[in-house]
Structure formats: structure tokens, C-alpha cells
Image 1 (cartoon, rainbow, N blue to C red):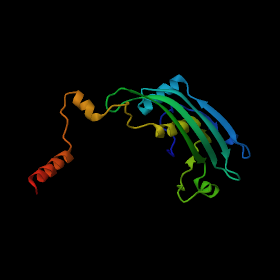
Image 2: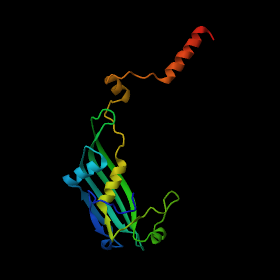
Image 3: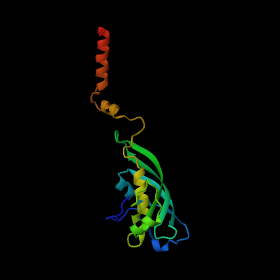
Image 4: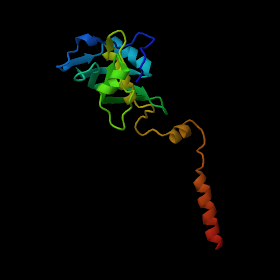
Length: 187
């Protein structure tokens, strides 16, 4: 995730003021992208289409502190281009996340208990007293998208052969032939 505010207007923006997050309550939010937002996110992530993108979030202040914890889950249907055949590859993506935001990184280190595996700089910075929940969810969605989608049954070797390119020999086949040749000569 990025600690800096995006330089462009986010395609899927749902701002929430941290002032409105009560310290003793869990705030529930449900987000759903519009068709226009889904189309813009599809362009951003190099997808052919994105549909039914939604998320459920639980937002709360860390007890006794200023850090805000956001736990969420999301889901979306998407279509990508197969990296071999360029055919449509339909998929469904689901994910969960747990992240922190703060206006004061030093104080957040003290407020948030970390395990040895956690990054002490994991809390993202709040900008102008607002958190963009839509952008947070969009960033986590991007992490779940398959970077090399393949259509079922498609292989690069078969595609090259179908396009008239000769099949390359496996280098281990040449070694096996040498071994077989030695065996036949009795060496």
C-alpha cells in the first residue's frame, strides 16, 4: 500500500472523516462500485471488465489512541486477457485485509501492538483528516488479480505450434538420446 495520497483522482473514492470514528464503537460500512467506477478500475488494472465490486468494512479507533483500524473483505467478478491466447479469462476474486491509518506515525507505533513479523511502519498516513475507503479497497483488490491469467487448456507451446512455429526440442531429450546411444554401444 502507498503512504502517499494518489496524484490522480481515484476511480473508486469513498471518503470518511476520522473525526467521525468514535473510540468506543465499531463503524460498519458497505461499499459498492458503480458501473462507471468499475469501468475506470478495469482500465487502471488492465482488465477487460470488472463487475460486482463490493466490500464490507469494520472501522474503529485503536482503544486509547488516535490510530484507526480497518478490517475488510471484498469481492469482484472480472475478465482478463489470457497471456498466451488473448482469449477472455473470467474470474472471481475475494480477499480480506486488516490495515491501520494514523495522523501521527510515532504515536501509532506505541498504540498498535505488533508481532515480530509486522512492519513497524505499517500504519498509513491520514491526509487532511480523511481516509479514502474506496481507494484502500481498490489497492487490496489489485493485489488479488492474477498477473498472468491463462485460459483453461491453453499452453504456450501449443499456441506457437498452431501459429506455424516449430516446436523446440527439450534440452534434456538430447541428453537422454546420448545416454541411450551409450547404452546401445555397451559403454
